[in-house]
Length: 170
Image (cartoon, rainbow, N blue to C red; front, side):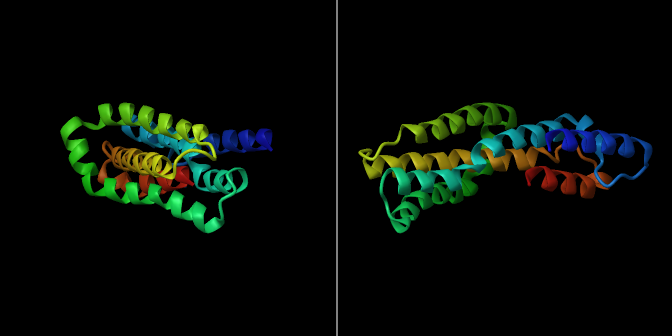
C-alpha cells in the first residue's frame, strides 16, 4: 500500500506540473509559511490525533474506569482548548508566531508524553490539571498553525490554499 501510495503521489506531481490549474496546487508549498503550516501541522496532528482514542482506552482498560468516568476526565482537555481560543490572538500578538510555534510545540509534546506517566494511582486532580493545560497548548498550536498557513497566500490563490490545507489536515 505504501508503494502504491508513493507511486500515485509521484504520478500526481507529474500531472500537476503539466497543467495550469491542477486540483491540488503544489506550487503553494513554495510559500514558506504555507509549507511550514501544512507540513509541520501534519506532523503535530499525527502526534496528537491518537489522543482522543488512546487516552480513554488507557483510562478504561488499564485504570478500570467506566466510560463515564473516563469521559469526565478527558473532557477537561476540551475545556482547556476552548479557554485558549479566547486568548490565542493576544498570545500570538504579544510573542509572535515563530516563538509561539516553537516553544508551544515542545510544551504540547512534553505534555502529551506526560500522559504516559499516568498510573491508576495518579490523583484525579493531577490528571485533570495536566489534561486542562495540555488542551490549552494543543489548541494554541492548532490556532497558530491554521493562521500562519495563509500569511503569504495571495487572495487569488486562497481557495486553492484552503482546499490544500483542509486536505492535509485530514
